[in-house]
Amino acid sequence: MADPNTPDAAAFRLPDPAELGRSMADIAERSQRIVGEFLKRQAEDGVAPPDPLNIAGAFLEMTARMMANPAKLMQAQIGYWQDYMSLWQNTAKRMMGLEAAPPIIDSDPKDRRFKDGAWKENDVFDFIKQSYLLSARFIQDVVTHVDGLDAPTAQKVDFYARQFVDAMSPSNFLLTNPEVLRKTAETGGENLLKGLHNLLADLERGKGKLHIKMTDTDAFKIGENIAVSPGKVVYQNDLLQLIQYAPATEKVLRRPLLIVPPWINKFYILDLRPKNSLVRWAVAQGHTVFVVSWVNPDERLSEKNFENYMQEGILDALTAIEAATGESGINAIGYCLGGTLLASTLAWMAAHGDDRIKSATFFVTLLDFRESGELRVFIDEEQIKMLEDKMSKRGYLEGSEMATTFNMLRANDLIWSFVVNNYLMGNDPFPFDLLYWNSDSTRMPAAMHSFYLRNMYQENRLIEPGGIELGGTPIDLSTVKVPAYFLSTREDHIAPWRATYRGTQVLGGPNRFVLAASGHIAGVVNPPEGGKYSHWINSELPAEPEAWFAGATEISGSWWPDWQRWITALDKLQVKARVPGDGKLAPIEDAPGSYVKVRAN
Image (cartoon, rainbow, N blue to C red; front, top):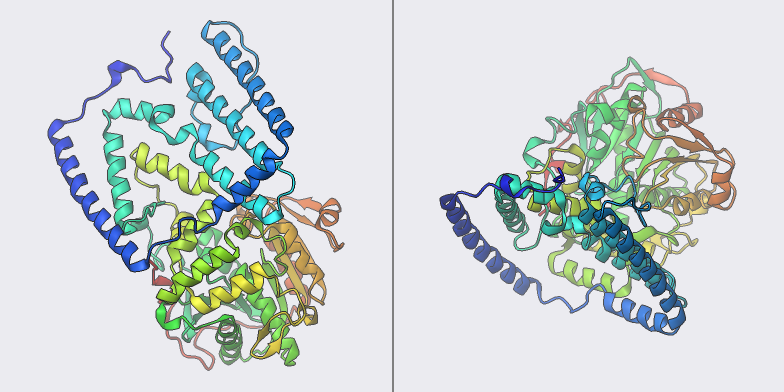
C-alpha cells in the first residue's frame, strides 16, 4: 500500500511554460542587479578579513587538543557506529514488514523541524531523521568533551558546531523534507519558484545581504494596531522621547513609574497589543507610567556614550517627570541593557546624594558579566576590533548586524524555519506582532557600543568598585541601597538567570529575586490573563543561584501580581490621577511618538 505521506507521481502538476519563462527572466534581471549592489557595497565597506569571527583558530585548537587523546575520540566513534548499525538493522526490519525495535534516537517533542508525520511513519524519512540526530549528537559530544580548552574557546567551538549541525538538518533541504516534496508535487514546483522570488526579494531588501523576512510587515503599523496605549510625548532630547500614558483609574499611586527599555530594541515590546501590554496593565493597577523611547541613532550621534545615556536618558527623564507630576520620588524599571544603565545610574546618584529613585526593578539584567551567556561568543578582541572598524566608518552599528547576532542564538526558530517556509515551501510570512518587533532593529552609537562591549562584556569592570567612571564619578554598585526587585527567566539565552541572580549579591539594599518560566521576552511579557508560564519565589538570597532555586516555591501563572504586591508595599499612598499635559510639560505629540517609528536598514 502506498504511503500517504509520500508524494505520488500522478499528483505532480506541471508548471505553465509561459509563466515559468517570464519568472526566470525576472529572476535573471534581479539577480544581476543584486550582485552588482553587493559588490558595490563590499567595495565601499572594505574587504573583510578571511576569518573575522576567529572561528578557524578555535577549531584548530580544539582539533589539536582532541588528537592529543585519540583513545577518547576512537571511543566516541565506536559508539556512533554501533548506534548507526543498529539504525540500519531497524530500518531493514521495517522495510521487510517485520516488527522493529524502538527508535535508536528520537527528536525532542518540542522540535518543530520534525513535526510532519512522515518523519516517523515513512521508513526512508525516519531513517534520514535518525541518521541526522545520531550525527548531530556525535558532533556535539566530540566538541564539548575536549580536555584542556579554555572556557571562551570551548564556548565558541560548541556554538559554531551547533550552527553547523542546525544548518545541516534534513528539514532544510528539498529532497530530504517530506513536507516540501509534497508541496512541490501538489503545485508542480510553483512553491520553489515562489520561494526563489522570496529569496531575491530578501536579498534586494538587504542590498545583496540576506535579510530574511520573518513576518508580513505590511500587517502592522506602530500606533495603529501595535503600541496603541493612549498617552503623550511630554519631553524629548537628542537621545529619547519620554511618553506619559493616560490614566485608567481615578486615583493613582503617588510615585510615578519610569520604564527604561534597552536601546538595542524598541520599547513597544512592553506595549505590543492591549492583551499583553505591560504598560496598559501597569496603568490599570494605578501607576502613572512613563516610558523612555530611545532614538534610532545615525552618524550625527556617533559620539554619544554610556555617560550620555545616563545623563540625557535617566537623569533628564527624572527631571521631566518631576515637572510633569510635581513628584520627585519615583519607581524605576530597567529592562536588560536598560537595567544595566539603571544600576550604573543609581550608583552615580548615590555618590551625589541623589535619592529620587525610591525603588528599582531589573528585568533580565546582567550586572556581573562573568557568565554572560552565548553572546560572549561574539565578544573577543578580534570581533570587537572588527566592529569598531565598521562603526568608525559609519558612526554607528547597523541594526541588522545586531539582529543577525541575536537570531543566531536561536537559529532553528529564527533562521532555518523561515528558510523552509519562505524559500522551500514558497509561503508568505505569517503576520506575527512579536516577529515584527523583532525585525524592527535599531542602530547603536559607536562610542556607547564600544564602551559597553569592552567595559561590561569583555572586561566585567562594572562589578568592580570604581571599575568604571561616569562623569568623573567612580561607580560602586554596593552603594546602591534602594529596594530592588530582580526578575529573570529560566530559559534566557541572552541573560542567563544564574548570571543575573548575582546582581542580588552586589547591590547593597533589600533585594528580591523572582524567576519566571520561558525566555528573555515571553517570560517577561506574560500577562496574568494569559494563564501561561509559572514563576518561582524564595525570600532568601543565598550566595549561589542553585541554592536559591533549591529552596524556591513554584507558583502558577504570571509574576506580574507578585511585583505589584512588592511595589505597593513600599508606598501605598495615592493621589488624584495625572493627565498628560496637566503639569509643567506640554504634550509634544501623541504616543507612541515619532522616534520609535524611525526604522534602521
